[in-house]
Length: 394
Image (cartoon, helix red, strand yellow):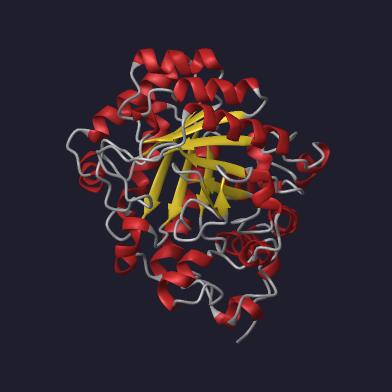
């Protein structure tokens, strides 16, 4: 994650992370990207079932029953292990997590074990009663996915009325006193909706938004041709910075992040170098703390069937299964070839990535995209939009 509001608008200083000691178990959520120990935030896809039909779903979710999901007892054993391991956040995802009836029980159990429980959802099933239950169990955050305003979102989600239901879910969370934010996956068909998403943040008083770059995985692997060009990506990132700054200048300090393309970090820095060199030096220190892509290190994924993956998009490769070995053992086993390399990708990346002067900040960007396009997971990420001159190899 690249904190646009933190980096570009100066809402977090380098000393903040240092003051908290940079231990992932102790850091507040908004500083986790600067943790020094990179204890993993774990995405648990608790079900593959979903009530929508999103065209870019990385999980190939569908509205039907899938066999082999971890039981409630197995899920609690996973949470026990993660809590003891020091994982700071349990992120319940899917499919649609609300189709699983014991979601509340599992989330409450994670909170009681000292973890921050958050939910990633399409928002359409969050009734007023559901929101109250989430508040009562101490849920930390709900991230609701919107891929545009009504017409565009419903087309992407494959169900008419999905936008209105999601907005109701947002309002129900707000009325219950739960922090809620938006998740938006950028592509050619919805990039024009970004200003409307900022308008929605302001209109509804939503405190947070994450803009995800497209990852070529699951049904999203069929959308490679629909990803933005490099020039289009630069324009969208500039727009996100501009609109974030406008909100902050109004006194509306929204948390705005971009996700899944760590070229954004150097890009923000280079822009600040022209606009505010003193602030740019502080941003460079924060980017060094961030260390770029964290697949297989600072973020991990457990599928509905217990398989462990480097992240939620890397579902075609698993390190093992929590039914056979605890997550903590699997995650710490650097004898596993890919796991060992993901702990530090820098010696293994190829091409322009290997020569890039931002490698220590970017961390080699997103390996799943590289593999999807070139069939070589160590090849350059095709979504890196920085020029050869900007990365120091021209």
